[in-house]
Length: 384
Image (cartoon, rainbow, N blue to C red):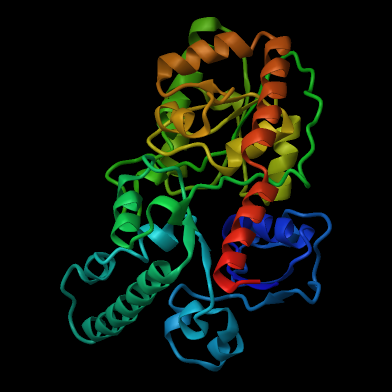
């Protein structure tokens, strides 16, 4: 079966692509972004530039590219669902659903009066976004199914998908981990534990237009928890943060105010391959502590065999998976301190949690399981 995949946010769809190709399917991919996080050569050692024939580079493409007629769009027309009307499966990742499928988005963009000629430009932009939302919703409504976060994580997304008829058997929740590319690694042995924080720094409220509860990473809770542990226990930590997210400046200021700065190393934005190197070098990985959920960052770290401290939303995830995640659950300053008491001084406890984490990922996040299910949907729809 020939399958086309358009877009590659965070290399997430590419995991499904690799699994489908491993099952012998003829899969072609259009890469539409020049951001390193969305390009496979910055994650997979066996993919390089120039790309093989089954990968087409059409970057860069703006979000409204599919709705504005152009020669560039014509070159990729075969990948755009509204123009080909072939059976489609959607791997939703965030903005593509929660912003571009939201009928309120054009009104948010249009808010605030402006003088001519800016008002005219804004009106044109509004018209483009209104068309984008209308076509995006049509694409979702016409899909065989969509995969997004587990129901209950985002009330906004749940409402949008319910309104588009993507409920029951038409809704999946695959969280994929590239098990073919991530091997478990022996933990390091350090006198001072190294902690790597993978979630972007987004926590200052109110959130900006276009953001959702999934953007609430609780970075302030994490920083306060680390600072309290260091102060009350009188022991050092080697903490590594990444300069990524809307609130890096606010996080830096909070780190300084709490006296944590001497223990924090700030890293420039990393490729996914570099992030994997950080996991291997870390004793403990920190993810999100807000209203979001553990996703690719935390799950990849667990696949490496590292203990993860995070708010994994067990109220939603445990019933869905059928067993609790073996990560170190924490959603408050006090819980972070307690989990550090458990893990920071005890290499054996960290290693045991890392082994349990890898086994859990293999049980619940294997891309081959998702690929077989998606392929079954396509076969049922096409009779092939």
